[in-house]
Structure formats: C-alpha cells, structure tokens
Image 1: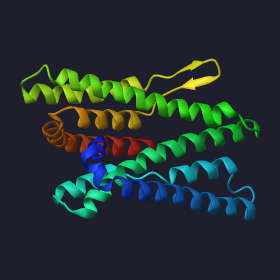
Image 2 (image 1 turned 180 degrees about the vertical axis):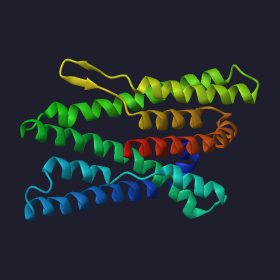
Image 3 (image 1 turned 90 degrees about the horizontal axis):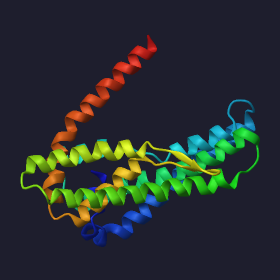
Length: 235
C-alpha cells in the first residue's frame, strides 16, 4: 500500500518537498538520539554500550505507516497536507531501513571485535538495499503481466494477495557469496513491488482500493496474534 504513494504523477507535484522533509526528519532523529545516548555512555559508563547507542539511534527513524494510512482513509482526508504527508511516511520507512542497515552493520562490527569491517559496514547494507529494490521491481513487473491474464476483479485481487505473500517468502532467503552476506528487507521489497505495480499497471487504482479493504482485517488479526504471543510470553 505504501508503494501506491510513489506514483510518478503525484511525485511530480510533491516529490521535492517530501524528499527534503522525509530525509531530514529521519536523519535528524537518528543524529539526536545517537548524541543523547553517547552522552549517557560518557556520563554513566556501563549503562549502555556504543553498539546499543548506534542501534537505538537507527531505530529512532522508524515510524508506523499503517496507522497513518488507516486514519487518513477512515476520515477520507484529502488536501495539500495529506498529499505531502503520505509520501513522507512512505519515504521515512525507506530511509529508516537504509540507516538501520548501515548502523546495525557498524554496531555488530564494534560489538564483535571493536574494529571496523568494511564489508559488514558498507557492502552488506548496500547489497541488501540493491537486492531488495531489484527483487521488488521484478515482482511488481511480473504481477502486472499476470494481472492482464484475468478479466475478473476477484481473481485479480486473489493474485495480488498471493503475490504479497510470495514476495515476503522470497525476501526471507539469505545466503553468502564469499564474505558478502546477501539478504533482503521484506518491507523494502514489498514497497518497491507496490511502486512498480502502481506505476505500470493500468488497473492498479482499482486493485489497490480493493486490497485496502482486505488488509484491515489482516491488521486486526496481526495485532490479536501479537497480543496473544506477548501475553503467553509474560505468563
């Protein structure tokens, strides 16, 4: 659903503003949290490690796009602010994933040997980002071609839902090529698939509207299962 906010027709109007605001607020959050936790590390030794501080700073970029999308759609909000807000929320997740991949690579290297491993810090995060975008683009193109084979909207919706699950499953694959760890981010893969699908499929507007109605019960089920697991874990 987040990929639907990256339609080129919309980005031409608000893309520059969304890009500047999205990147600035995400990076500013990481920087401020890193500085604050570094201060805790210096003033209260033993309370937190540098690796933990870096990781928590990266997590600070993350937001929950689902809640924002559901509130906007519940009230059918439409206007300049909403048009700017949704791409920012979508971009925030993309920036957050990149920042987290780099920061976590640095944190793991420091925690492991206190040194610097260029492969873990730079190469592995870049490989994850590029592979995720590539897999998402391929799946978005394949989904578009398959949608053209059906005339029934029900079958098209079923195909869309099935492809989301298939894409998430494929994104769980990870392997090594020498010292390089090849992995995927399921969120970034699905976001890219949605972006490609919404920009090249002429039926995407109708299909995305129908899939949104299907995802609300899924969100409810997800939170119910998560709450049950949390309760079982506590007791």
